[in-house]
Image (cartoon, rainbow, N blue to C red):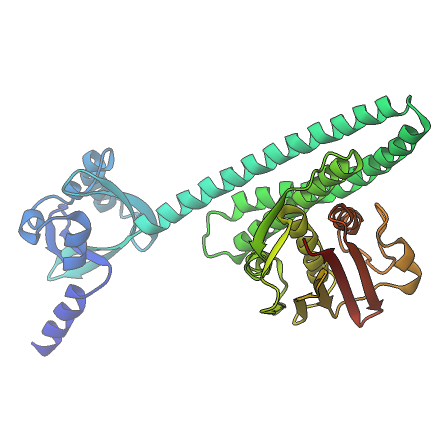
Length: 395
């Protein structure tokens, strides 16, 4: 009796549903978990044909499945797990994983079904599929935008090549830009295409870590493309004098905290961005958008060219006539021979290796700082890091 009571307690408290039927398909027992899944009370199911809990076409065919097994002795589902659909009392259909075992008891065949609800997993699979489709659309839109940009730049190159000497110099810049764009876009786009295909392949198994890996690759590749495209557009605006200052008054410390919050998403493993607060530097009058672009460029470079478990310092100071912003890292540093060319368009230091970049970021920063009537300088040593300093006039 004690063993029977223990067995009943285990079945009644099982997380998964358990239903037993006889060889005629009539339900003999159903545990509370199965009742909750199908929304039936036990007395509504016991004594009824198990097909009550099945949608069409299984509802109409189930009895023939049992008869086929009894006559042939060949099990098709017994001893195996399979994904099937169930029908609740309210008519709703839901997915579950079914395992069936056969027991001979007192000369009769008893079939026990073990039911594991798959509703949440299927919903997660559908969300993943929708997210994958969304990423594919983003990639498609970005690729189209890049193609249009390259086509526009090509047309611009052809137009300026027939103008004055000053415009010929601009034509050379456009030509170099197109060459770099062709190279820089090819690798990220290939990564996007490959990773999207792999996501589709691995999406059947939500526990496969490869899914997360390739989603990160897609995000990284799209981010690289966005940065490259933004740099091209910013350079074009700066070169064509399309930027006008928009001076506003704002709290510099809150502004920097906001930027750091955004940039923390880009940091490497155990990298830290440290803001050194300065209560003397509060309200300032500057072009907020230009300053934000400058700080993001400098901190992004510090993240990119520094290793894991490193610190990047962002500090401010103020004199009677100047606002000073410092960005310091302990990354790879800049070779001394490259110092004089560092703010030139398309120039990259010789020790950057395979680290992606266009060579436009610091050029754009220097142009923006100049537009705000400020100066930018730096100190650097190989493998010891770099300190960039922006000085802007107090208005």
